Image (cartoon, rainbow, N blue to C red):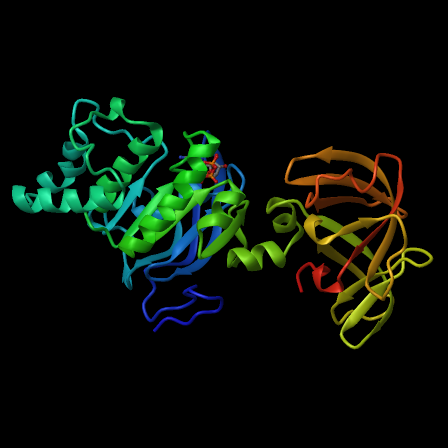
Length: 375
Ligand SMILES: Nc1ncnc2c1ncn2[C@@H]1O[C@H](COP(=O)(O)OP(=O)(O)OP(=O)(O)O)[C@@H](O)[C@H]1O
């Protein structure tokens, strides 16, 4: 049974495709002990597109290598479809891994590259040809069977690598920064392709990336990692809209972190009053006198010259930078308390910017977009 929290997102199945329980990994390097993974508990559902997202060195690749069997945990257990696989070699694990350097055989055609694994397993020639054909159709490489890898674009080569991994019908595919070598435009096109392919084959994908846009675009759920631990696990929307820690707020997109002492509270709202006519209204249970920290996304804020009407959030500030970015304009504003706030204003008309550098402005937003960190 698959429950859904947000539309189409599996949050729990009877039997997890992949489960990590108390997994830790330390390496000994030059007499020093390096803690790469400090304790992971994760359950990845059957057919889920699950991403491990985090900065360089946070333990993403080590986690993948332990799922694949290239590394064994120092502590804890790894389950694949309910079976404890600690000690089971990679080729007996029913998972396949795709790397950034996809290492196709240069002297073999697309067809031979994809068929290679099947041949080694002794799959009959006609059956192999059928499965390779089916897979090349899915990755949209029909008609290019006879080409050599060097006669293909980077994106097409990556799709051959994907077909080569998928043709073995693994129950899960592990992808470690598979689009890292491609330029931005191709990367974005391949993100959409990868998601489509995953939906079509219905196999669990575990995807490693340090690119937040990539993770937000493709994933059912994301685990944001930092220093060998998971900081937050949730749907892209949960992670973007309601970051659990300041690290997540800062790592995923641009976020404004504000803080202050609660002046008034009641009816599920706390109000910070930084100055006359200024207020930050936060939906939370904090009491007067309490210090709170909150985030507001740049696209939720308006910039105006007059104080806003109503009882929404209102802050006074001075514009320090204006950068026109085509689709929107980026305003940097220093508030009356010295906080730096970034605002994105969508350029719906081609009229002038709403403010220029040095202007005194008011920032306003709906209290629903004030989100207390860790709430
Ligand atoms: N074989 C090893 N020996 C010693 N230290 C290692 C080894 N493999 C990884 N580490 C260390 O473990 C930590 C986590 O590394 P890991 O490669 O898992 O990070 P990552 O998040 O995948 O980084 P990147 O995005 O740069 O690939 C790092 O500090 C790294 O230097």
